[in-house]
Length: 522
View 1 (cartoon, rainbow, N blue to C red):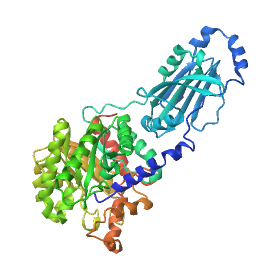
View 2 (tube, helix red, strand yellow):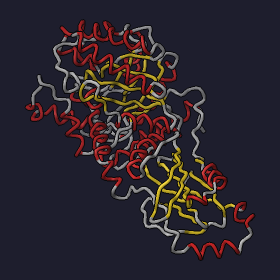
View 3 (cartoon, one colour):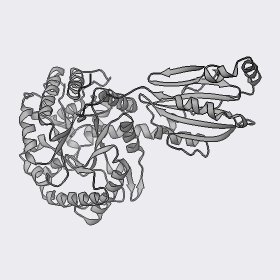
View 4 (cartoon, one colour):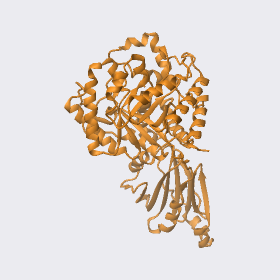
C-alpha cells in the first residue's frame, strides 16, 4: 500500500527504544518486603489462629479476567511500587502480584533478568535465591498473560522457611478467564492494526487486536523491513518481530507477514553491508534466502502466510526491465525456503488497483504462478485518491483477481477513506465494508484470508513521516509541493475504521457486525 506501513515501524522503534527507560520509571520489578520490622507481630497473630484455617481457607483477588487465590490468613503488606496490585504476607513469606500493562512475558523477562542475577526461565516460571539485608530468601515466580497485560507473581520466603506446598498452591491457582470465541471453522477474517500515534502503539495494537478477535477475526497482517531485523550479516535484532508475533499468539491470532525487500515503489531497506546492484545477483539472493529461512523458522507456528515483497508490481511499473530479474529472485528464494521449510506457505503481494490504473495486469500474470498463493491489496478509488466510485465496482475487481490464477489467494489490504476531501464519509466506508463481506462470503472457497485496512486513522504527526517513506529517488522531494501530495497524505491518514482517538466510526461497527455474522460469534 502507498500508505501507513512506516507508521507501524516508527511505533515499534519508539516502544522498543524506550523499554529500558520505561523499566526505570514505573515498570519496576517487585522487592520482597522487609519482614524483620513486623515479624514478631505477625507471628503472634499467626499463633492465635488455627493452622488448618491458615492453610485451607482461601481469599480470591481478581483484576479484569485475572484471578489468584491465597490463604485467608495472609495480611496486607505495604509497598510503594507503581506496578503492584497485591501484596500479602504471613510469617516469613510474602506474595507479590505486579501488573505490567501491554507488556508480553518475553518482553518483560530481560527486565527481570537485569534486576535478579542468575534467573533461569522454565517457560514463564523461575525459581531462585537472593538476599535482602541480612536475610536470605528463596522465591518461586510465575508470569501469566491476561487481557493485554502480564502479571508477575512472586512468592518469597526466608530461605529456611520456604513452604513449597503453599507456594505451589497459590501460583497454580492463578488463571485468566478471558476466553476467545470459536470462529466456527471460518477463521479467515483479518485486520491490519495501525497505531494512530507511536506513543500509544502498545495499547492500541493489543486492545484493537483483542477486540477484533473477540468479534471472531483470527488474522492480522504485518510488515517487516529486512534491515530492521538484520543490521549486518548474521547480526540479528529480533526484538520487534518477537514482540509483534508474541502479542498475536497470546491473543489467539494467526498472521500474514511480508518482508519488504520491495517496498511498493522502491527497493526496501537493506542491511548495512548489502550493496544492491540487481535482484538476481547471486550474493543478494543467497543473503535474502538465508534471512527468510531464519525468519520463517522462528515464527512459522504463528505466521501462516509469508510474503516476499509488498505491492511489487508498483515497483515494476517504473522498472519493467527488472521483472525477469525478480522472477528469478523469487523462484530462487522460494526454492531455498522450501528445502528447509517445505510445509510453509510463501507468496508475494500485488496491488491490483495500481495494475488496473496503469494497464499493467500482465506484470502480475507473469509472477502469479510461482508461490503457493497470491496476495493482493485493493483500493477502489478514482483520480487523486477520491473515493467517489460506486462500492459495487468492487465486484468486478474481485472477479478479475480470482481469474488471474488457479492458486488460492488472500487479501492483505482493502479499505475505504472517510475523508470529505477525498469525497467520502463514514456512511460510504460502512457501505464498502458490507460490500466486501458480501463478496468474501461468495468467494471464501479460494479467498483464504481477508484483512481490512485498517484499525485507526493516523495522527497528523505520524502521517507526514509515513507519506515521505514512499518518496522514491525518481520522484524527488519536489513532489511534496504538488497538489497530488496533499491528496496522497489524506489518503494515508483517513482509512481507519476508528479515528485517531480510538473512537469507532460507522465502518468499525459494521466490520464488527459483519465479522460476527460470518464467523457465527454471538
